[in-house]
Structures are given as C-alpha cells and as structure tokens.
Image 1 (cartoon, rainbow, N blue to C red):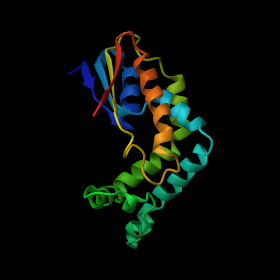
Image 2 (spheres, helix red, strand yellow):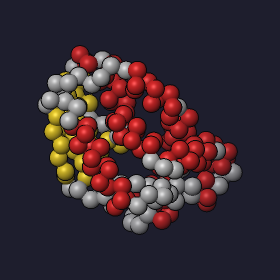
Image 3 (cartoon, rainbow, N blue to C red):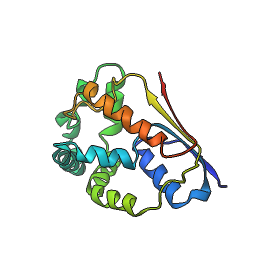
Length: 178
C-alpha cells in the first residue's frame, strides 16, 4: 500500500505528477526518467507551430483504426518510424502502429487543453517531496523523426525543463545519465 515511489518515463510523467499533486500523502518519492511534466507541457505548447503539430498528430492517431483495418498504417508510416536506423525500428513500428497505442495518442491529443487546465487547477506538488530527475546525456532518439524540430536545438530547452522540475522541490535533484 501507500506511500508509493513513482518512476515515470516519457508521457507517464504527467500521470505521475498529477497523482502526486492530487494525493500527496500517497507518494513517498518521485523519480522522473526523461519524463514530461506540467511545466514542460506548458512550455512545449507555447512553441510556434506546436498547436499545428498537435493537431496533425491527433488526426494521424485518430485515423489509425480505419487505416489499420485496410492494412495502410505501416505503409503510410505517419510517425516516420521507417527513418529510424537500427534493429529496433521494425519492432517499434510493430508495437506503435497498433490500435491501442494510437488510440492512447489520439486521446492525449484530444484532451490536451483539458489536461493543461486540470494541471492549472490542481494543487501544487508538495514542496518537500523527494524528487529525482534523470535526463539523458545525448539527444539522439529523444524526439520521434516526424516532429519537425531539430533534437540538437530542442536539447537545451529539454534540459532546462528537467532542471526546472527538480527545482520544484526543496529535496529535488537533477542528473544526466548515459
């Protein structure tokens, strides 16, 4: 039972942060592993062109059930996963281009505004929660290839957002890891 140690990665950081803010007595520690958070969501949404990109991702993700039914999703490759080098690219396509992950992505994009508002309305993160923020030491593979942002240019903003997250707690630490 509680209290829990939450260890989110990627978009799971939003869920973990929201839980920690709503149920502070149920969370003993947070360990974010290159995870998104409400501050990052606010900043990324403010990037010029971000809304158009979110809308494009929503349309692509929400069309997946129809495209999958006709065997077109992998052929169209809306996330440009074929461009990813390495052995894992085929596995990534097989795991991502299915109804469940794309339905999740569709729902996330449809609920973007409501999510932002829910975070704005939620209590703040407990100021003394033990918080560890782990961040990659290389931007390679940070962003999916379909996102029209150069990872090297996004990297300083990502590092800044991760450091800002660690500063939300008097017991927060930030560390780069390989």
